[in-house]
Image 1 (spheres, rainbow, N blue to C red):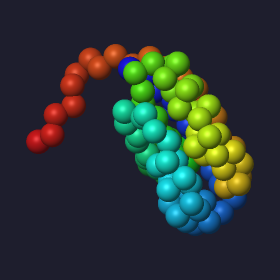
Image 2: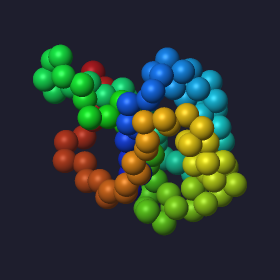
Image 3: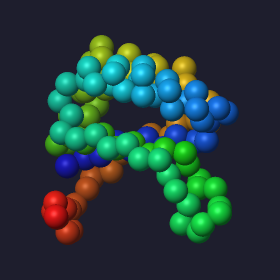
Length: 108
């Protein structure tokens, strides 16, 4: 499985970022077809009281990098990528990695 990670830097206006992300970007991104999973998390510092290096981390999952690239090259993927510049005032870093599950996640 391959993950595309997006690291969002701290936005100029976090409330505006959150509202846009929730109300505009997520519905747009949900139009992309073929993803096996999608995670979103607000970053928290490892040391209390310190600012984490990123504001939000997002993971998009597919069977392979080629599958992720095909999803992103689709019209829906391109619209989603082009939307990032409209709200990510703190910047966004994208990278791929191949994941190996060492300990499977189990619901309690």
